[in-house]
Image (cartoon, rainbow, N blue to C red; front, side, top):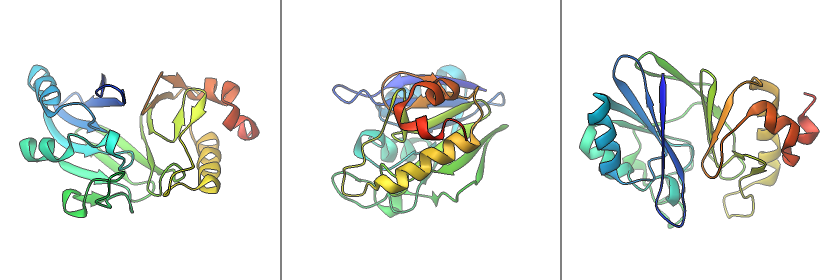
Length: 201
């Protein structure tokens, strides 16, 4: 398995990723960059895009979804309640091929991606766990967490989601968030103030 990292446009700088398996299948996580950037990577790697996996539906994470889906035929996966057709959640249900189920496993070629529902920043946020890498979207950042003061946020749900991550995710797992720097789960357990109360779980 190989993970490639891109950043979305100024001023949002959303982290977006291409997951490549050894057999030439690929998934894009949170396509915030231009469609052409992903198509160039797929051509260079000789890979076929089969999945577009979204950690949530906010505008800064979904910019290339429609164009990329049309160009490749890849299936779009999103959490329940995230396709609202609003300014904050611009995707509409017809652009989503499948809504996640909690603890669902999605096969991207030989790579297996496990879905962990982590509501809080938004109603249908998920983290995507693949081997020793976890794409956390706007749930967990290095030293911080996603906002919980938005209309579709829920601070109590966020607390439960953070506890779940502390309880279930191994320490050596790399944390690849939707914004800013990367980290690991053990570092976040030790240093992230929002995880301190769960650090011993």
